[in-house]
Length: 498
Image (cartoon, rainbow, N blue to C red; front, side, top):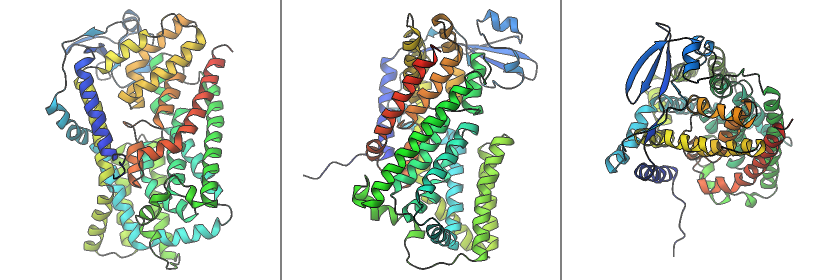
């Protein structure tokens, strides 16, 4: 009998989409009223069951709605998305999602996720152009010689820098660009592809989990909770240092084991298949890193530097990031004097290499669309908020962490989770007798921990780049996730009693 194979990422997501569609037939439909600030006329718009009402944008209006958030958080643009209004949950007529909605969900998801999908395709195009020049091959040969005997420094450097990016400006979706480039470097260093995947993905996840100044999580969540984002900063810094160190040690231990005996690799049976995917590893030639190729790598690296600067300092989003990689590809084509036809063919071929990843992103977005259209997201939030009634401080802090972990399956967006849940969840801290920063921390750690394995997040798209199965990722990451969960629970328990 042929051994059963774990399904592909696309199939896993379609199964989840089917499960969510079934949930819309079982979970009651309901919705909170929402409040949005209008900068044009300095007013608030309340949306209740599709009907809108405009009221004065004042602190008195917020107090009347029991929203304990300073007015300036809205007027200065800190909160720009509609927020949920406490105590306004209403059951609505059921809107179950049938076969038609299930079939349409991935298509709708692809359309809604077009911004990140186009970014991924343009990154693929840029990588294809750079691959054609031979610059990657020359760079990997040079790097392998430079790091000989000290390859572990690569793990420390990549994991730490990506974690810092996640903690400061929310480096997450952007890491998709790093996988096709850095994984061959790790393979050339005699590690396996999982080491490269982990250094990038775990680094990003631990950084966003222990965010210090990330505007897309801690700052928007703190604003929506009505507290200053610096409240609880030292605790987050402590968790960042401890958890990042744990992750680096864990990855290095696995990497050294694989380096010593390649058969110990969790993906050993895929070794040849994975290595054959990277053109720069297919040849035994000794490509020299010429001045022209150094210039190609400089422009390529500069694309990422410009992207990081734009996102962190200039409020760039996917359009600007995509344009940066497109311009970079054109400049590299000019540097190596690639003719127009060859450039277009190479760019398009490179983009098609990441088409599967783009589809995964779209299907995952479709799962969220099914929940929103089925009107069950707010119902799950409402019942989750009722679970914490009467809890003591320590239990409350940990329960909130696990509640947020569960909710992140249905609402994978960190900023979306913050504005939807924080006005509802943060007042619960007042009744228990703890600071609202505890709920903000629970939100971060819950989402962050589940993000390591969340199929509706970025992990399946990341794994698809090197065709590593979700089952093999789980085998690798689960011990680390258990360790981090224990550390988080201890920290949350101790923090509420200090």
